Amino acid sequence: MKILFALSIILISTAEDGFARPKNLIRSRRTVSPGLHSHGIRDFYGHYCQQRQTCCPGRDDSCTVRYLDTVCYCDLFCNRTISDCCPDFWNFCLGTPPPPSLFQDCRRNNQYFKSGATYKENCNLCTCGKDGKWHCEENACLINEELIKEINIGNYGWKAGNYSQFWGMTLDEGIRYRLGTTKPSSTVMNMNEIQMSMEPTEIFPVRFDAREKWPHMIHEPLDQGNCAGSWAFSTASVASDRLSIHSMGHMTPELSPQNLLSCDKQNQGGCNGGRLDGAWWYLRRRGVVSDICYPLGSQGSGPMVNGPCMMRSHSVGRGRRQATMQCPNPYSESNDIFQTTPPYRLSKNEKEIMKEIMENGPVQAILEVHEDFFVYKGGIYRHMLVMERNPEKYRRHGTHSVKIIGWGEDIGHRGEQNKYWLAANSWGKNWGENGYFRIARGENECEIESFVVGVWGRVSMEDMHHKK
Image (cartoon, rainbow, N blue to C red; front, side, top):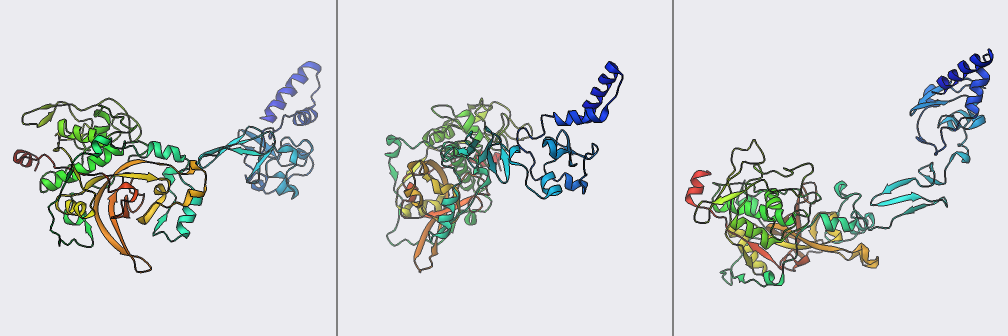
């Protein structure tokens, strides 16, 4: 680029006075050049002169290397103007650091930046100030490395990990986008509890996993992404399992959370949060289709979209409904509607919850999620007050909903008995223990035993024959 510009000057000079002075004109051009590094050295660690393997003595206008959208020089003349030397000229050719005059205010990783430059440090944006210092936001990040370290060196019974899908998010964003269940109203919380018929001496196994009792009928965790839709995911997942179990495997649909997110609009917020009682009402009165028929992200890019409902149904008698529209997925062979009976609330008693799971299948539970739950990697979770000494912004919680599929016990290193629930989350299989987590049982840890719901799949002989 510089040589072409110099040649144009040569032609103009020759036309005006009849004399061509290429060397002086090129020298003049290089001398008055605005410089390659007027905005600070870019690609500080790039190999340019080193790539040529030689540096040129004196002045050599052919001693160049391609540099971004132009060329840079490796001859000693470039050091006179400090305007067009390659980034590694000083280190490679002279064995000295670049002149400070090339740098702009702030330094980071041995690179210098001009005032106004920015970079992202996890969830905080840092800006180079005129005082030569970096000024960073002070948000509490969802992935807090201090929190992870303290949990892992402590003897808390569980381990923490760093998740790439959470990196760069603030803690407030995690609460806002990764949960999404509205805490049940006082009216719903006060609904009558179903009392299980139990013998005083009834004994339960030490360990129970619904996946082992009902193979191929318990549906695996999905990923709600940055959609505050746990209300739809947990409801669809529990209903899927219950329909499979109660139909004795004749119907094993994975019900569509997207159907609920997009079509259950009555006092629901889709990916902005929703109510469990509203979700179950929709499943009872309207019903939903399978995930194959109405897959996640059916209305656009991304895993979840708050878009128009693409599935309608009408009554076909005795409370049953039938789809009136084709599946959003044109390759689906069935647009069958699946429904449930009204949900029922279980007692807070752990034995009654265990009996319900063992006899009728997984249940739905609300969970109060705190900042440390996001980094759960494995073990028996209990909320730890690790961040208590930090400002309040580092401590956040919000309501979530999950599916409990079983229970178990572990023996601690001191010989103590550690009881736990086994539950499925909706943050994908690379979170926790392959998408599942264990949490302390019998202590109402994070309110997991405060509101537990079961339901019966609406199954008729006609349904079993038709969907077999």
